[in-house]
Length: 67
Image 1 (cartoon, rainbow, N blue to C red):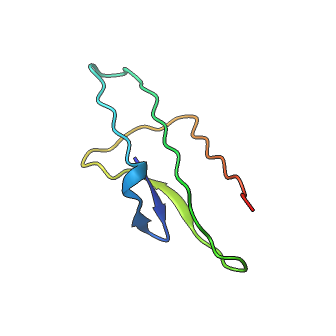
Image 2: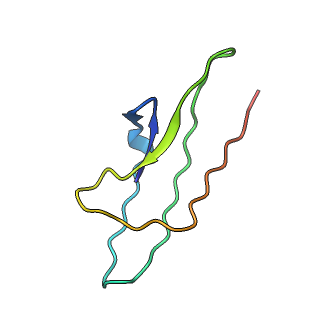
């Protein structure tokens, strides 16, 4: 998984998880600072950047405005 800003991946947000068995779940986490100019907007998404499909459950994204 990785954070994408306006469709472009953020390399520092790349996370990986390799389960040892089927139905074995893992937690992943990333923190990314995104600079958005005043009066502008930005599209922030989470994306599966791997080559296989994944099941995602209980996704949480926290956005904090820092002045």
